[in-house]
Amino acid sequence: MKSTFRFLLSFVILMAICTTDAATTAKPNVLFIAVDDMNDWIGCLNTKTAALTPNIDKLAARGVNFSNAHTAGVYCAPSRAAIFSGQFASTTGCYQSSTYFVEHPEIESLQTSFAKAGYATYGGGKLFHHPAGNIDTRDWTEFFLRNPSQRNAGWPMESWSAETPFPHPFPASTFNAGQEIKGGLFLEWAPIPNDKEEAMADTQRASWAVKQLQKKHARPFFLGIGFYAPHYPNYCPQKYFDLYDPKRIQRPPIKANDLDDLPPKMKKLRTNRARIHQKLESLNAVEDTIHGYLACMSYADSMIGRVLDALEASPYADNTIVVLWSDHGYHHGEKSHWGKHTLWERTSNVPFIWAGPGVAKGKRTEVTVSLIDIYPTLADLCQLPQPRQQLEGTSIADILANPVNAKDRTVFLPHTQPGEFAAINCDWRYIRYSDGEELYDLKKDPNEWHNLADRPALAAVKARLASIAPKKFAPQAQKFNVKRDLMVKDGKFEWKYRQGNTNPNPTYKPPVTSKPPFRKTK
Image (cartoon, rainbow, N blue to C red):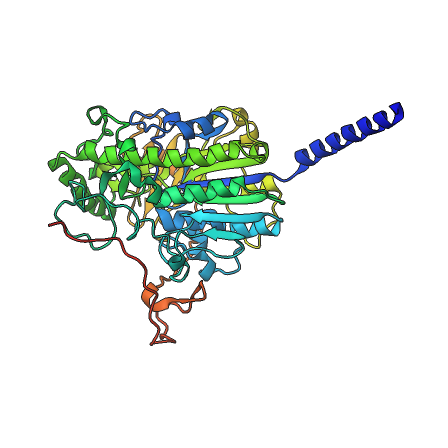
């Protein structure tokens, strides 16, 4: 009897050791969380105009929080193309587009590398750009779309469509009141009733991600979930607006005549764009506009919290790498600009947080990194096979493990045209356009108010920073036209031909997608 007991005890101990070893050596899962247009106003970065983001802050407290992380593209399409392809627009030509998988079908996207490594791959929400035909549909075990109609319309995200809640009256913001909105919802903000939260697209996406984490997975998984908030329109439940006292909202600092020292082309472009800020000033609506943005940052944070809570309650909590990133930042009057598309700090600087196995806990670092580093870092940490294309980022796995000893580096950021770019590190930001340059001493001039590019004494600094740019830039990728070029059949889409070619199917009619109720308020 005793010998039988000893045998059983030994067997249990042996199984426990084997189970522990298997858990230790198993490939980590990945929870890949994207937000849209979220700048660095998150609480854990201690900015003056800080949003209330307790869930993001909690994630930062158990991982590595990068305060000097920069986008790989200056707005949604090129940024996401760079992240999923692992290559800059200067290589793919996607300066203003995201269809790298059409221009360069040889590129193995991030999810393809995970699939080749034996991972189950799940995606949902705005991971890629949101219009029809922009999702790289290859190698997903499952990609979540809210409505069946989306699958038969080229997979548009339709975060704001007929069945999602809109404020009344519409348009709602002071900026757009009484106007007819024909496309886009720029500078629209307003609360919606709290009981409409479940009907919002991002809420449904969070619920889908939670369900994936509640399932039993037989193999490691890559779970990507993209939230549209805080992208315009800044519509979210009233309770998130109520988190903020409108009287205590601070606008960012702005310098008069800030645009005077820009190169001619950019000076003209940004001066024209500054009329938006001037209109908001005339309407006394700057703080009100910021209020809507902060509310939607808190709404996005709440959805992120639901997903992180589901992970924490799951069997995968200890073996899942979490990556949180925003595709780019957003200006709210800085340098008289509203929006993105610039090579300045407010567009380039983004929230970027990692946590999980192989990542130090509770560390914040100012070392300069780029979102282009995501692909090679995950390849390192998850033992992914080398893709066919050359990855242009740098693995930051060593920084994640030991951020204290990290050394700064200069990162590259292409603009919307070949040959235009920024080179950024902790000390300097160098910008080159087709007709001129900008140079900012970031330690002395964090607001980037004083362009030093014309100073002869800084020529060597400019040359050193500019050396990071490629010697040759790819030409601009050709643009596709949804009405003419996108072919959809049986839930799959294909870009049939490129701009300038003869239409091979002149009788083809594009799929009808649901539209938000754009109309003029009576």
